[in-house]
Image 1 (cartoon, rainbow, N blue to C red):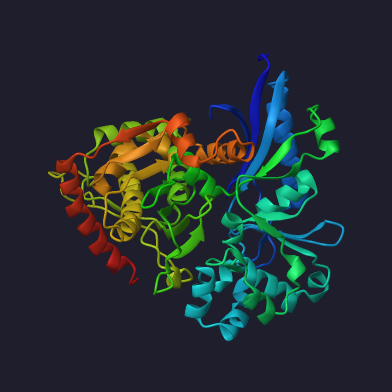
Image 2 (image 1 turned 90 degrees about the horizontal axis):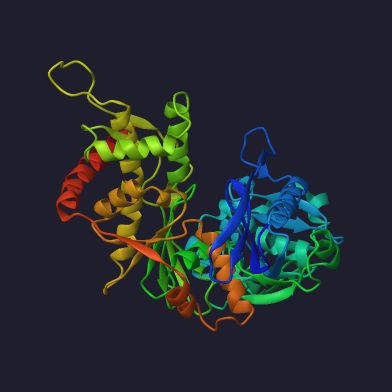
Length: 501
């Protein structure tokens, strides 16, 4: 049993899992528990998705109980949460969840026309920085108004998933800019709920909670929960917000021009800016950082980690229990280009206007017809999957880095950042040095950083980064980077042909 220690309780609900951890005041993860986040179909077509909110909450409670049972002589100085962006929860007057939908719930596809009839794409983007309408809370709320009137009539609060956790732990209703920015209801410039959108669709203004800055104490742990976990009575809850913004904090991407790559199930790529900047083509999103006075320009490489996990499950799970280690070895013993083997599994430049088209997955390789030539083996296919992911990230990184007329730092964290060989590959494809966060599960760290701010341990995020975060600089090899320029062009040319299938 550990000795008495002051720790921060952190919760991260990502696209696929519910993780609960304990983090020290020095931002070291002592322990974390991971459970599967289940998502259910709400229609036959699979467009409408939902959470089982009771199951989700039970897993949060079970995760807390687990980590605290391992550290009984512990003082919890604060609690903070961060969750998948775009997820929404609607409550009735008693605080019961009428609906909880994940970031992949696109039931709004049936109601997006209402948004499109009321606002031009450019006008809505100028307010919210987000497109297309079918993805976000706005269209989901309109879906209930149009398709489930009985449920809509009971709605009293419209929350993000992180807002819901604030309510469940404290009984209070608050949101923050990093979460609210992903609803398509926030005025990004003003930092407040858009009165124009609310008035246009005749929403009750009381649907939407008060917005405060990330790193603000918004209440304390309810007495019944404090007793359940055998904690001291007063445990302050510090609001954090979106998991991607927390990840950016935890990897150190906080200064203007910094680029952060989150290598999770997907790979959102963000550039930090000091003022809201809007893409004239309404493609690249504008969001709010966790830091007051900082905004984000987002490009997105798509299902990167998901593609990697699929390959491991489909091709490697039958003969190894450690596919990550095996792929690490494959990357070490293969060369760039993977014997002219090219993979297309989805990672690519963000094109939000083409998200509903049918995508084709493909492996392109030399067939075994010439006995005098090498033909690809499993290790070459593995490398080509990782190169596809790196090329998708490169395309989006290039968009953001080309907008900067001064030197910048590219930060990296997330599950795939645990692979040293992939980080080398990524640096070589980008043609730049990358700074890899020492702690790859950086959403935990970002939530804990917000807690340190809320508890006044630090007055600014820059001091936390300089004093508590550690990085490994991974340099690119210019010779290898030059090879990848040619390989990327070949990959891109073949991709254009596949896209026409």
